[in-house]
Image (cartoon, rainbow, N blue to C red):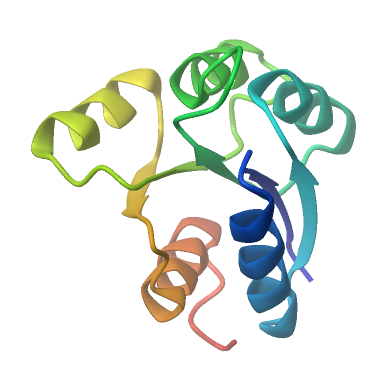
Length: 125
């Protein structure tokens, strides 16, 4: 059962997304801001991080840069989550080191497909 770290400051989004992913068989741990996301990533070493980019304090881009700069966490795939769907936002996510990008509101089927692709686990859930 893959463990996902969801870093999302909006409580409703965090609760809804984590419940939906848990129903698909994932273990989900959550962080509410960039600092907590970094701490949880380093302590728990999740299989994948879902990173809201518009976080208070350390934003999702900077948190991703720090995850990718740390040899202990650099291998962990990061999917940027944002309500912004412009090409420049996708480019900013890639420049920060995100492995993929998805827009909110989350399309669960699309997001789960991206998770499975990055984890190499197929689409069995």
